[in-house]
Length: 511
Image (cartoon, rainbow, N blue to C red; front, side, top):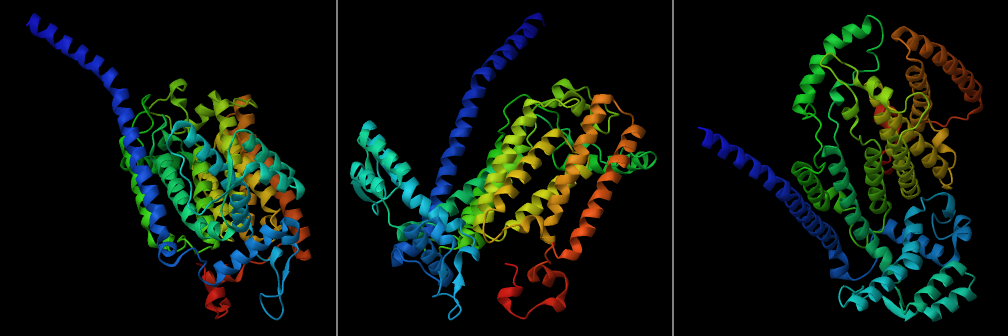
């Protein structure tokens, strides 16, 4: 018996030692396999969209894409200032069209940037590095090779000092200047961004399905739990429901200190990338030659969603927070450990950074397509729901503040948009969420600093909330008669009020 017990302990010890050695190897194999198949899916997403140019050549097809190409050509030839003031007499004949203030220019700016800046640098560096290491230096057969020094002199003569310096630097390293025509770039932009949208959607699935060390979200409680009497009743009713949903959503497992990239999360990423790479609704808007707004906007949209979810990623707060089975609102305990009073933790700063990046991606979305209204409202609605569910944190406040301030400040710079984000009734919801989250954050900061009781925190909320509501009512009452707030668009009105439909399918459509 003693020998068997000793043998069992030896086997267990050897198994643990083997696990320590094999676990990193298995993780590396899993990640490498996932990267291989992700690359295969991206390649499939790209090549599947090239059939049009393979069959018919590098030509722009359909009416809107050809106008978009004309606009890109004008921007390429004349620059941004002339483009913004361009009045095109060949469109909307005989009236003409002020193009700079009636289109979303993000797609044209992207194509011109790729043609003039990114592709020459990328092709030059790739070709030079391939010659250095002996492999991997192939570039597009559609590229035209020029002397970087000659291009530098030509750019210097035309007044493009920055790109002249870049070309001169490339020449000093022995690199070539490889250009593609604007027509070829505009033909390939939908296929390139179709593959990028596949990648960003996969990253979104990975972010949402990975375990980042904190799975006690089902015990955060709700925003209403602190209300006397009502809060107690809600806890009795909602706790079983939350536990049931958490169990079947796999949210009730304990936090682990292992890898965040589980097999299921990687499989979720690959499955999402597969569906996004071949789904007809996306493919028909991102085929090569179909140079239209949606091809660029879908990438920007999914990038915003991924960066927004990334900004809310948790660390491992459970490790320094004591949680008991009777706790219904873990969020208060976490806030007392992190960002206590008016301090700022590293996690909050990280959330603000990703929120700012999401705001930059949102600016790209605004510049590319009118569907940006959906993006800002969805992010605002998500933030509001998190607050109502008691999931407010300083990370949420920092992420949404960075996203909204940066995104809106840049969005109003787009000529066709202007001050719409703070005047349109369709976009006032996210603005109210922004002010609301400042109010909630201030109250929570005071709560953790002064250790306020339930009654004290609600008294503070009523006082400050009443003052904010009064000021808001005065401002709205003063601005409403002036026509400051714009009406809801006919497309949105047509969804809910049938008699407002115009009868024109192009106007009534919400596609």
